Every structure is written in C-alpha cells, then in structure tokens.
Length: 200
Image 1 (cartoon, rainbow, N blue to C red):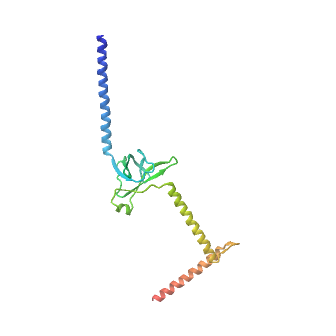
Image 2: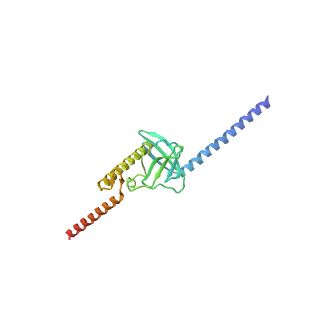
C-alpha cells in the first residue's frame, strides 16, 4: 500500500513538472510573438465596404504582396482593418490609395495599395480609401463604352452621308470623303491666312 502511495505521489510530481514546462513554452511563444509583431509595421484604416476581405487576406503594394490583414471589425457604420506589413523596409508613402480588388478565378480578394496621386497626397492622410470595384460597376462601364462606340459610328455614318461619301446601295466611298476633307482643310487654311492678314 505504501509503494502505491509513493508511485501516486511521483505521478503527481511528474504531472506538475510537465505542466510547468508546458506553461513556460506557451509563455515563451507568446513573448516571442509579441516582440516579433512589435517590430512589424502596422497600419489601421476604416472602410465603408470591405467586399469580402477576411483576416489573413493579402495586402499588396502595386501587385507585390507586402503583408496581410490582421483584424476585421465592424465599428459603427464602418469596418476597421488592421494591416500588418511583413516585408522589411517597406513604408507606405503618405496619401497611398487602398482599395479591394478581385484576384484570379477562385474569387480571392486582396487589399491593393497604389502610390499617391496629387489629390490623395493633399488629403493629409497616410492611406486614402477608395470604394471597391464591383463586377456590376465594370459591366456598367462596358455598357457606357458600347453606347459611345455606337454614337461615334452613327456620327461617322452621318458625316459620310453629308460629305457625299455614302450611297445606300453602293456603300461608303472613301475617295469622296478624302476629297471633301482635303477641300475642308484648304478652306480652313485660307480662312486662317485671311484672319492673320486682317490682324496685321
């Protein structure tokens, strides 16, 4: 019975020793992580829309990965982001522009940072936030572009008809358009010469 109690006592002593060692290891890791994070450069920004950014999302400067997002938290009507820059000797210039961008076919998002412009540098902020570019915004721009191309085409067609270079049955005659343009150019030169002679 005494042997059993002695073994039981040694088991408890060994458990306490291993627990103490484990606590020392955990505290050592925490202290090391604290000091290593203290050496890293951090930035804090507020955005109205993070468009799918999460903790761990990459932070890129002109397409080059320089860090990651450490915290994402909703504060009132904005979203708070804490950025950690892991690349050494990288300091963002004052007035840098940050926005959310879509990367690759997998749909991953990253926080893209671009060099400052005159307007963003004049704002006085270290990082100026721009709204993310969403897919429907791009489709709207594409639609506007096609509308402008259609307008240019109809104006060109009208110009060709007005200058006598278009026949509905025969198509567009570029030779006639070129002749009319040369004539217009000659008239403009004559008018310009006439105006300069009047000034003398």
